[in-house]
Image (cartoon, rainbow, N blue to C red; front, top):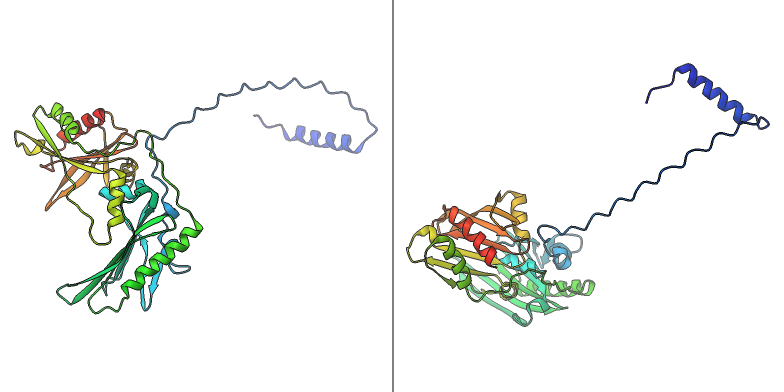
Length: 348
């Protein structure tokens, strides 16, 4: 808009002053302003569904310090022993703990070797898979002295917890008291916040007991006869009952696929994690996965894979709800895994 000359501005100011101060001067009626046009209402945008369903909210927000820490801090003190208590990373099958609304905490003193850990889930999510178990302890020779460990399964206030504590050689860490402290503090937290059941989202895969459908999908791509077998070689160790109950409740599984030709690029391992599609989004965000494209996948990424002393890469894909991870026995071969992942998604 062009600026008025200074003279015109001065005249307008003077005229305004006269009109405001002279109440007896009648002014000509100004022409009625033209009615303002009514803007047409814009249609409300349709609500959109996220491409990948978000990670479920953990019980207590996953705040280990708020549940187990001393007042005002992220430290757990038992007698003369003070350990940090922080969220522990959940990777691989342990992501199913997050799928059902749980979380894991841990703390360790590197100098003494003392450590503590707890996994907490809503008890209803694992049904009766991990009933309460009293504190049990054992000793073992670490090579530099005897070390002790204790563990227990606690069910309190609608939550289930695996609790673990370890004392290094020569340590005075009171393990039984440490587990009792975890239990008491979880009970107090449960009084402040009741557990909330996490509903299974639409499209979440059911637990697979038969790997043949996955093997058939792979065979159609590879052009070889492929057999599949379920592999659940890992088992609950001391103080891990709730963890493995969560793995079962979450429905994770691994299928080992073998081709008749023995070609290492056609021998595959398929890890599936129902409801954990958000984990790939996290990996792409933190740089631990490199984005790629796979037919039928909402998101796909190349991620690191390890097997024994070998390290290589594999393909992770999600349909927006579930997570699928495919590697070959030749961990550096990517091409077959991309096509197989697409075929499995299409068949699921």
